[in-house]
Length: 165
Image (spheres, rainbow, N blue to C red):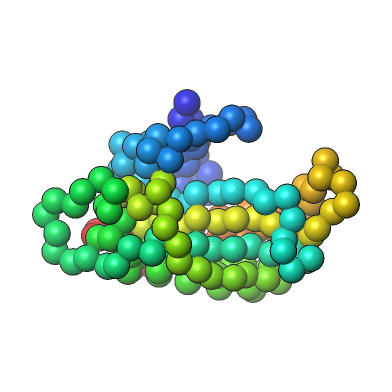
């Protein structure tokens, strides 16, 4: 069930409030119904493959499309690739300035491929732990959350942040 809150002057719509699975189509429907100005699809990994805390930013691998009147559901993101790239750049900059290691990539992402707004998948990977139950690092997660919020505020205030395909 989606919930809406206000943070830093931005309406935030979440697709879940617990560790329950949410279908990719439901995530896209929620973003599209909310007429989202941007969407961050957040995931927490148990550990970073490079044995250090990191964030991985992923964009859809769909090719960019311009001046499209009707975009099929599974390729809606194609009209937003350029703006999603600008959003990823803002996120990358803020995370890097916060001292977080960031990797960027493009991949087929069913939830994001169907979103009609700038969208980036954010995988938060803390330092590898021997005990999976202790995988969360509150300080690292707080640093990432603050950097993501700052990037969204800056991106929104920038001329690129105005909603348009």
